[in-house]
Length: 97
Image 1 (cartoon, rainbow, N blue to C red):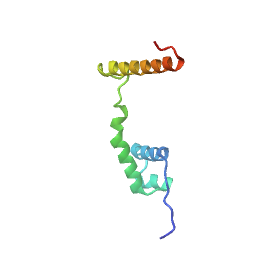
Image 2 (tube, one colour; image 1 turned 120 degrees about the vertical axis):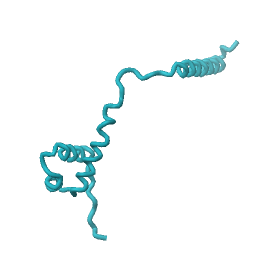
Image 3 (cartoon, rainbow, N blue to C red; image 1 turned 60 degrees about the horizontal axis):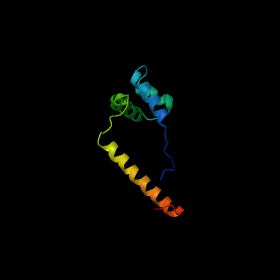
Image 4 (cartoon, one colour; image 1 turned 90 degrees about the vertical axis):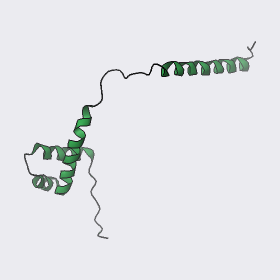
């Protein structure tokens, strides 16, 4: 073993380096030298940003569509639970009929 530890880069650092590579002002080798990473790593980060860029805006705004059948089922379940709790409380307090 060489005893050299791997460097762990955070997401912000990767994004910064990858975006600089996308801008194309400097070559990948220059960017790698400036930030002290391997040029292959810079290329991988750039590729990953470009692949995931399309999914950034996929989420639609506004209220989410609600399944019209799931809401009543949830509410009936809640009613049943509350009735059971009420019956238990009546029994414990001595108010049962």
